[in-house]
Length: 119
Image (cartoon, rainbow, N blue to C red; front, side, top):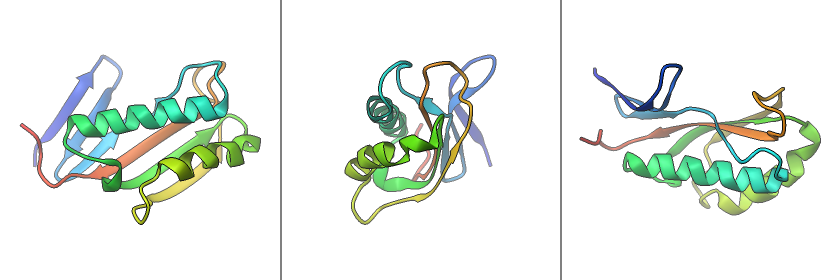
């Protein structure tokens, strides 16, 4: 089974497809914004990457959410709840972690199903 990689750099790819599964690198918003702003931006990036390979948010299987401060859980969820496709909520985990850069408040790691591998 082949592996396809998109937006590949020396350290990582933004998208990897193996079989009928799409894996996305962690997506963040712009450092310094509120957790709501960063969540909206990260979700938009997830949606854009999924779109590149013919997927939609309804195809999400799993999303892992990392928050720099778990006190932002409710604020992040307010944005998440408005974004997630009704009846298509993926499995999800959320935890607190020190993120890669100062000013980042949320990071999303997504996995989705794909009906066919794009050419």
